[in-house]
Length: 100
Image (cartoon, rainbow, N blue to C red; front, side):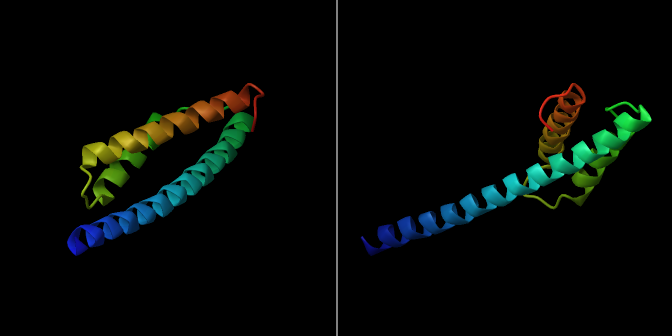
């Protein structure tokens, strides 16, 4: 049973590391969203559109190229597309006078 106990302890240790990473990711995602809101305020003052297809394509291409796995580049692009979409949605809602 010592082996099973060691395996459970290892599993718990790895899960704790994942929990810490999840909180770091959350903190970084919110920092990114705050920066996107700053960009949104600049765009609003200049009357520029929220959506910039060229910039988003650049971001997606760059993260896919920088990816070294184990996630596929397609998975990384999908994750970042979701981040971009949610930041854009937040930027649009702040233009309408909601929280921000």
